[in-house]
Length: 43
Image 1 (cartoon, rainbow, N blue to C red):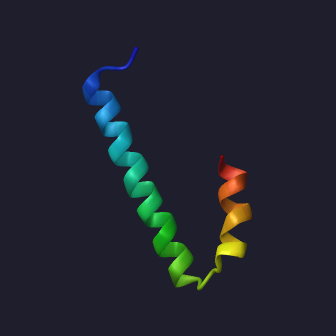
Image 2 (spheres, rainbow, N blue to C red):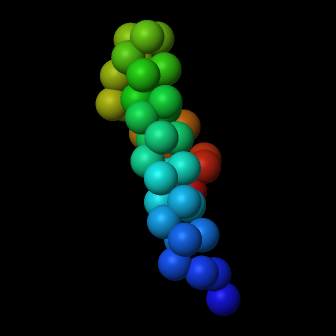
Image 3 (cartoon, rainbow, N blue to C red):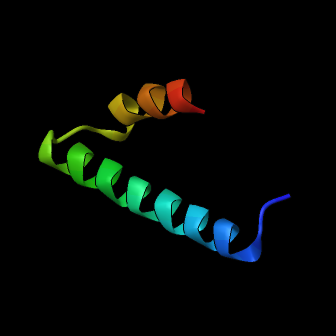
């Protein structure tokens, strides 16, 4: 079982990871249609 601190840290990592993904998508000017298969591959 993970500690509260570990869960909080994981949530922060996940949030930063999503922010980075969004920045990359914007930099590459990807559309929602282009992003969808990328996101699906990671989930």
